[in-house]
Length: 196
Image (cartoon, rainbow, N blue to C red; front, side, top):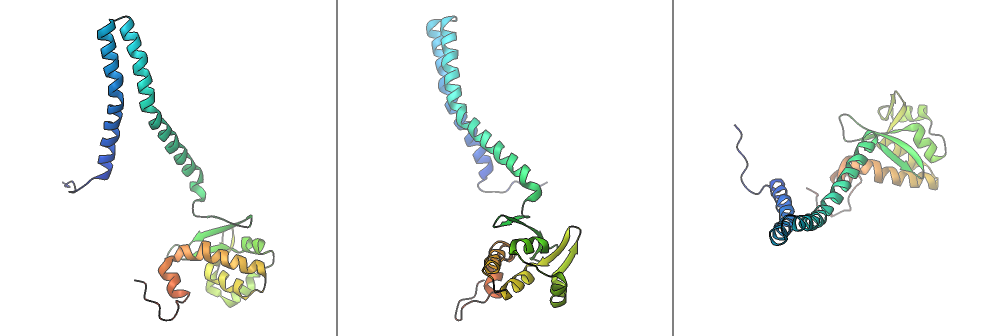
């Protein structure tokens, strides 16, 4: 049998705080309803007490209903974008398909999408000859390893290729490997401290 962990439980505290705050907000409504019923009698007092209690209840529940609507909206957005989460990238209005590698912290970019974004050809046979491990055939086309795409783009002498190189490095290459990998692979300045 597992034992409950010792210490502060933030989730439990938040649930209790929410109920406690709601009860404190509803207490004036119940108290005013009971007081008016006792003071004015069952007919008029109860009616007036219920109207005042409804006003206090609406004031107490309004922030909770707004928070519920916001949480529902965020959940619906998450469900709507879940099929493309982490795979939808866009450069200057051009959609670029990006797939994560199954084993290594690297990503693969669709060659046709890169060529469209670049506005020029990226010949697959040349890329296969130069980087045989960096080109893969998949069901929906040819994919290029992100490092190979960076190497190819850095050799081009076009402004758009330079901007695309910067975009691939910032949006695709860097997030897949993290800060430490970029620090060691891209090269740190001499005399810089080690990142542990």
